[in-house]
Image 1: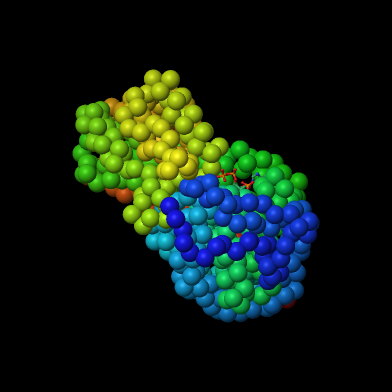
Image 2 (image 1 turned 120 degrees about the horizontal axis):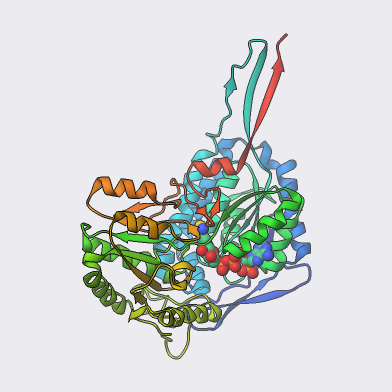
Length: 487
Ligand code: TAP
C-alpha cells in the first residue's frame, strides 16, 4: 500500500482569493483510513475565520466584480474550472482516495468526471436564466427577474467530497451567488485543491471560499451567520434536523440532502445476471458509504434462494484491497468509528434473526485499515433495524416479497425516500411500480447512475430541494416581480 508520490502539502483556508492560516493558528490532522497514517495537517477554521469568509463572499456579491460580470463571462470561468479539474485529475483523485479510502478507480474515473461535468454543465446555464414578461394589465409593464440569492453556505459530507463541491458550488455560482464551502473534517483536501484551481481560473476574490473545520464550530457558525442567505447541506438526517432548527433564527433558505435506506427490487422476470451486477454494485460501490446505496434488496420469492446464493458468491469475490491499486473495487471505510458502527449493525442483524451468507468481518490489510468485508444478510424482515436504519457501509439486507403490491408496501415502509431500483422486463410493471415508490429517484434496470443534468434529492426524511439538473437552479435563485405604471 505504498504511495511514492509527492507528500501532500498542508491544507489552508481559502478566503477572499487567498490561501491563509486560521486566525487562531489551529490545525487538524487528516489521516488515510487505509493505512492509518497522517496525510497532512489542515488549517482549522473557527468562528472568526468563517466570519471572514462570509464577509468576503458578501462583499464579492454586493459590490465586487462578480455581480457586474456578464453571465457569459461567468460561464467561461466555470467552464475553465471544469477544464482545470480535468487537467489536474490524477492529483485530485489521489487526494480523494488518500483522504476517504475509496478506490482510486472511483475517484479518478467516476468522481472526477462528475465534478468537472458539473462545472461544465452549469456553465451553460449561467447565460440562460431568465425572467418573463407578464401581461396582467395594459396600463402596466410587468415582468419578473430571476436573481441570485446572495451568499450560499455549502456544508458537505465525507463520502463524496469532491463531487459535492461540484453539485453545490457549480449551480450556485452559475446563478450568480458567491459560496463558502465547509468540507467534512475527515476529507478537506479535494475541496481546498478545487478552490485553488478556482483562483487559478480567475474567479474574483471572495467568490469561492473554503473553510475546513469541525461541523460543531465552523458548520454551526456558517448556519448561524446573518449574512448567509442559504445553506445547502448534504449529510446525516440528525445534523440536517439540527441545521433546520438553527437556520430558523435567521430564516435561511435550505436545501437538505439527507440519509437513505433505498430499496432495490428484483422481480422474477428480470434479466437476472444484470440484476445481480446491479444489486452488487448498488450496495458495494463506494464501500456502501453512499446515500443512495441500494441497501435493501427486495427479491421475489420464486427466485429468492437462487438469487441470494449467487449474490453471496459475488460478494465473497469482492475482497477489500489497497485503495490506490487501480484494480481495487472495495476500499477502506472512512474511520474506525464508522467501521465499528457497521460491524455493530452486522452483529445486530444476526441477533435479530438474519442469516449471514457473505462477509461479516473486518478485513485489515497488513494489520491496518478500516476495511470491512462485503457482507450479505439474508432472510431479513423489513421491521428489523438492519432494514430500517442507514448502516452506511458494505452491508446488504436481502428481503423476500410475494408480488408487486407486497414489494411496493415493503419498499415504502421506511423513514427515508431517497432512491430506489426496479428490475423487470415487464414495461408496464416497471412504470406502475416506479409511480408507486415514494423516492426521489427510481432506476429501472440500472442502479446508481448520476448525471449533472438529472435532478437528485429526497422524498420523506431524505430531505427537500434538489441538487443537479435545471431544477436545482430554482433553489439557488429567487424571483422579483417588477411593476411599471404606464399611465
Ligand atoms: P454528517 O455528520 O451529518 O456531516 C455532514 C457535514 O455536516 C460535515 O461537514 C459535518 O462536519 C457537518 N456538521 C456536523 N455537525 C454540524 C452542525 N452542528 N452544524 C453544521 N454542520 C455540521 O454526515 P456524514 O457522516 O459526514 O455523512 C454521511 C451522511 O450523509 C449519511 O447519512 C448519508 O446518507 C448522507 N448523505 C446524503 C447524500 C444525499 S445526496 N442525500 C449524499 C451523501 C451523503 P464535520 O463532519 O466535518 O464535523
